Image 1: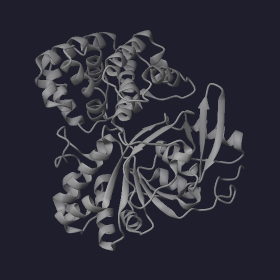
Image 2: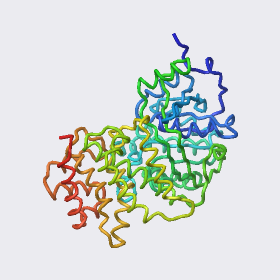
Image 3: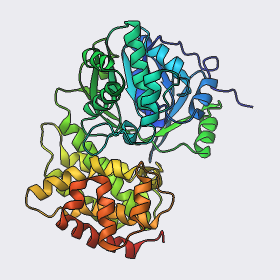
Image 4: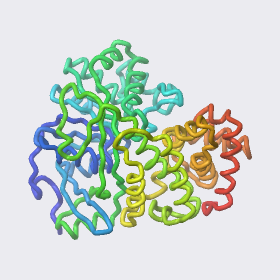
Length: 459
């Protein structure tokens, strides 16, 4: 029997906890944990990572002393590296331990990968008090008789503990795929804090910086075959390896009042203006992913590589990129090279990035990935047809698929009881009210959705 991966079989010292992460999953481990291990001062920066929804990842990682293997996978083969920057893996339901660590004076950075939907913001960018879990968390934060259950509520609870401990300022670093994600995180956190304690909201404004980032590394779900491959190649049993493409990118903008790791030693880039980089990634990579997720599944494909190999899907992606690129401006963006690199990355057949995984939370994702481009195209006097096709693919997918995973799942189900134009209007209203009120856009999306309905392999 192979030995279990841990800090005895693979000796790794434990750096002191100075980073608390919320949203322990594969991407965090292939990205922020990888960058922290490769920082020049890695020995000073340990990460305590909390799960967001379920305890499973923490249970497995805790048994391995936080160690896991990153498998970099390309057509040239696999390479393997043990990552030891996560020094404590904890069930997110342990809100007491979370608050204790947030309140610790040594803690300097909080990083977040809690998914776009977890910020519980409405289309107006403000906290949605009616979103799932928000009302219960507001009550819990007000009377302190219960602990909050959402990632956002837990973060506000932790920051309240830091204020009470007079532990000083820190930085919150949002690593979710949202435009202006630092501002989104601030609006969500301060919005929830203000609803329960104006003094806490004022303290957060004065003491917590919110750093905006653009993050990029394709990290599919780990399979049993991946676990077996690590065992065969490395000679130990790792029940929590992470498979990722060789490419990685991290752009950050903001202040770190209590210090940060030297992530730039690992290739991270610090900039004054992050919006051009955010938009490049959100529109070109994430927007294309959403298009492939919906159109690809409707055409019977399961992975990004399969969908991209379909001429119909690839042509739709290229047309969408043409529209998006017209609104991407800034030095150093190198759009043609970025597009070429995306085609190569998407076509990596050894990275099985499943379309069903990308398709989740469409109402939130499309608001960030497609809507800004459509608005810009129409403001320029053009139809925005290629971008409208992204949204049309989603409307067709919601009708053809089953078990849609989305924060607006109930609204989607209600909309799909309607027919024709009324159905399209109802679906678009879940993304943006103005979108649903634009007759020309509704007509365009309805006409495009019909082409997907006729080609659907999900019916």
